Image (cartoon, rainbow, N blue to C red; front, side, top):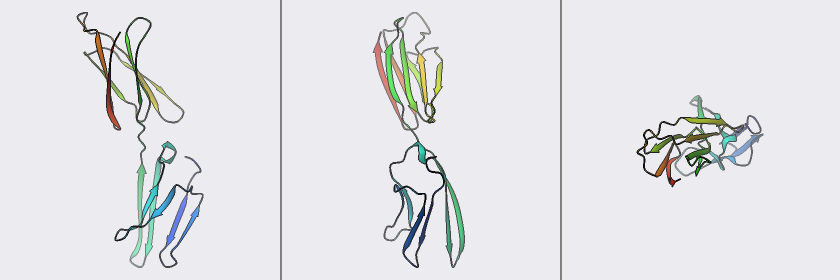
Length: 153
């Protein structure tokens, strides 16, 4: 995580906010009729992790924990290799994407992990039969969205 733990304190009685080691993109937001909320602007992988909220009031103390999971959509790349076989790559996604082919393929996916927590998934089309159309489609499934591209090698 970037910068380590951050403490952001708001006191209603003094209407003051105190922060320690918090970047400017983490702040309280106040909206009429709603309780204060923690706002994280420009969310990226560095902001993923555990967040806790503690409230002290005359009614008692309350503590809640949240885990923020950041999704990174992969970049889709489809090309023909030197042997004329379609190759599909879902580059730098988090979590890893799922790849499939149309027509169906007996290929298996290879994963390469990156230092920033993203994963590139590569699949080379392997025909189940010799009676296959010239156009193949790679389909990418990911929690951030689904994509497909077609190619004739």
